Length: 227
Ligand code: TYD
Image (tube, rainbow, N blue to C red):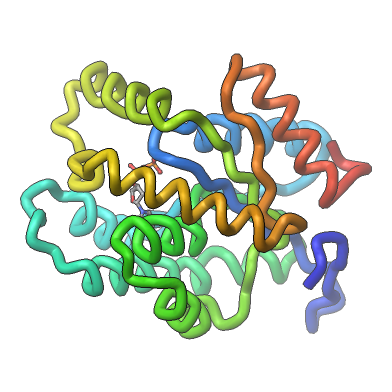
């Protein structure tokens, strides 16, 4: 589906838009997603926010397995299947019902994260991610993805200070090497090159307000009249 098309569902409603937010840990994507959702709601759009992994109760249980630092022996294939299991549940429980009734759905991460983190970061390759996406998401693709791109140093620094401030132990993903994150970034760059209409890079450097303006501008491709 092109970014400007809408599809009439069986009930006669116009199907909502599916928009995802991507970026490295500490990129600010979650904050930017919330700001844009609040902005659109204030203008009368129904926006449902979800997150991967963890957008359903089953997804939250899977998320605890995935992020537990004690699971340092979790194999890369098992890890990838767990991300997709959480997503498949989200498709059934949150995403499809909301789109069918005409709501816009924002997701903090989706399959592009698996492409970048497992396909590139863990080097499992692109094909396996595409195959599993077909099974888990059954053809549903985001209409628009906003990639909040920050320097690797900024992202790692913010993620570390978040853990210190929250006295959190950190998650299994926080223990990855710098080389891993370089690979993840490479995955995101490839997506932006290949699918420039759908996967849009937003410069994430600067103040919250500056980035929020860029996010609005990028979103206006999808719904110019709503922003
Ligand atoms: P989270 O604490 O939600 O990080 P963030 O706030 O940066 O999104 O943890 C999610 C972690 O899971 C994050 O390091 C990215 C990783 N991840 C994958 O490796 N593959 C995936 O498919 C998804 C959705 C996330």
